[in-house]
Image (cartoon, rainbow, N blue to C red; front, side, top):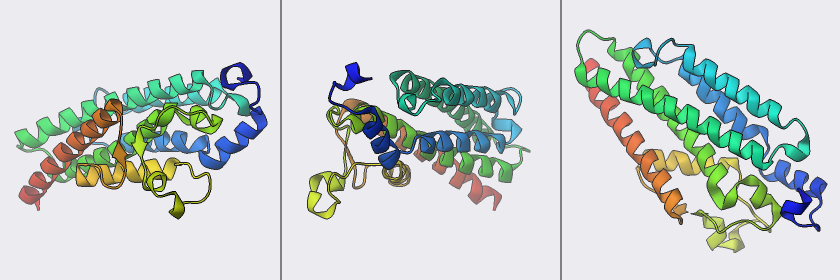
Length: 227
């Protein structure tokens, strides 16, 4: 780690900074929440057995926890790659469920409308949590690069970055800031006070807005018919 971040970087100080700004368990907790939400989906919008995808996601999450038990490795490059792979798996599962939800809502018929509406709400919440973790892992090269003091150029422009007089000294975005960014993007279908700066950030926010718009649009239309 010293070779990667520079000889003058103290691993213990780096660990303290990581725990202060981005507790390592927070993104894992968000991913665990998405797995639990997947278990509540109706059978009509699940791929295969209801336990198949949550089981695979749970194994991947367990592997992520085991991969770096030492505090110095909690934000290692290997851990970040595993985290990105896990987010990709859960995102693929969420997308597949959304496709099935769209099919059921458009087809109509004797399906349980209230259960489908509930599944739509679950998928929307999962969408918010997943993209919050995407943003947390993407911004300025990830948590390790941000804590090292030599991060990449920012992918997101937060209000505190443009108006430092209104932020504590040395302010850095934390998990809650990315959750807020994800939530507002999923409700407004566009950036609000946090602006995407890089093409990757813009593509991710576009994908999230489109997914949220489709989910809410279909759920609201179905709710009008059912209720």
